[in-house]
Image (cartoon, rainbow, N blue to C red; front, top):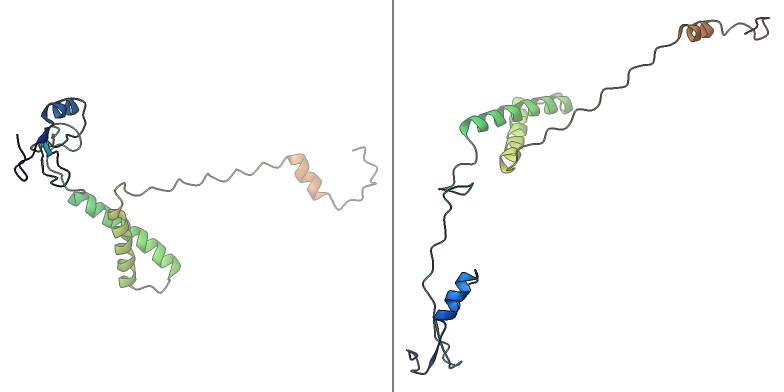
Length: 151
């Protein structure tokens, strides 16, 4: 084959491309003019991308959220806003709470993994019971220490 631009000789890479495809590599141009000043090339036709029939990317992408999920997240955002706005701004108006809920809701919707719930703090350690003898000793601390008792 001759170059359609300059009528000079061309490289024929079709056989090498078969080997490259088998190895999973990108193809080179099928034909390329040997004259560097001409730089004519003919690429092989593009192969359609393989579409998996199974797996998370099969078929057209679906919506990220369902209406039920959106409704539940907005309700949760509103509850969180009510709690925190009333706690921090005692004279807050309804529009302040709605604005806070909208901000929280937007943050939740932008996050693809939802919201982490903070772990509950561990319960406080129970108080140790006071022994009866110690309690009685505390009651009698006002006695002099040299009271003739053996203990």
